[in-house]
Length: 202
Image (cartoon, rainbow, N blue to C red; front, side):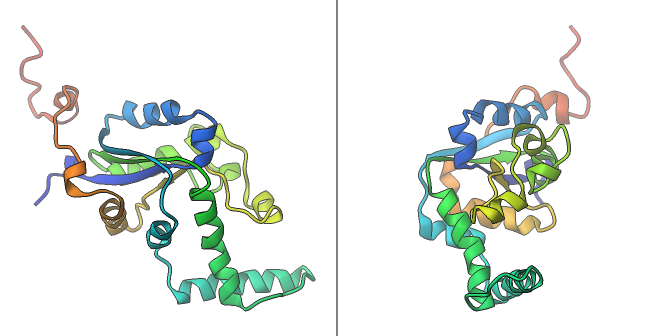
């Protein structure tokens, strides 16, 4: 059985985070918790790979699209296509955004890594993210304005969902080969995890 301190999670700093020169700020927030960076890639990602990354099926597209159609009807707006196509538009917008420029992909390791990263990152919508989170502190976007502008929400980061821990492993395996992830020890892990703190006093 794997030790809890070896839990890993996946993070992408999105094109808006790169363009706003927030990489150092974001890395620093994760690093200060004691999590350990074990993999990193920087570049423009493949569109087809992002469709795999978002991993949605027709049932998901239909459900999301049906909600969009209902909202359009309620607001007296024209419905111009099938519900499933509105659902697919959600991922189309995400993929267009994520391939618009370079992204920074990372794998972080440590106890409760998935939940800790999500807590620091904040809720999906920046406008309603808690103060103190990356999204709450560093951006002002909202679902409302992104819908008006027909684009994805610019919320700086993608991170794995703690509600589906198996997704972190799937995302890591999609973007990183095993040999691209490092196994090493940080000195501060002794303070975080060692039982007896041996060797501090001289």
